Length: 156
Image 1 (cartoon, rainbow, N blue to C red):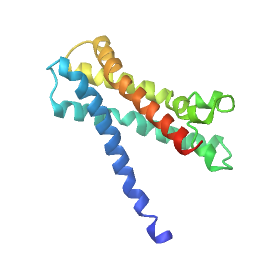
Image 2 (tube, one colour):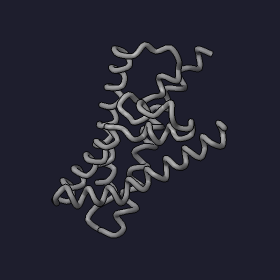
Image 3 (cartoon, helix red, strand yellow):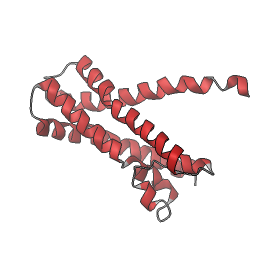
Image 4 (cartoon, rainbow, N blue to C red):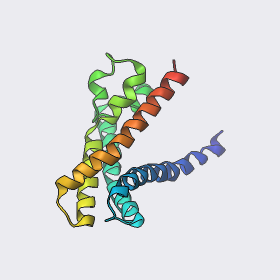
């Protein structure tokens, strides 16, 4: 069993690539109405914006290390900076992913995406924020719905 543990490390770059691709697809789908961006600029923006989630992972690690006495694996699945912390006992189990997605770093990611798009387009941040709100956020909502549906189907 231990000799196969290294395979789990191969999933880290795969998950990171999938997350960047998801953001790229959302932004590219929205860019059909504007021709200001190239495909490579969206890749660059998506990769640069991922730093927000890296900071979130490090912050969550430090918070868990110094402030939480971990007794179960379920405690590790809770993002300490999300709404799940406040509602985990009062909502159905299938909706926990939705509340875990609503966190400080997800909001930060949206604003960093908007800022990077504004820099790339040489425009103001507000139109870029509207662009992100109309492209990335609907894609995120569809993703959350898919994960919630799968959690209902496979974990009744």
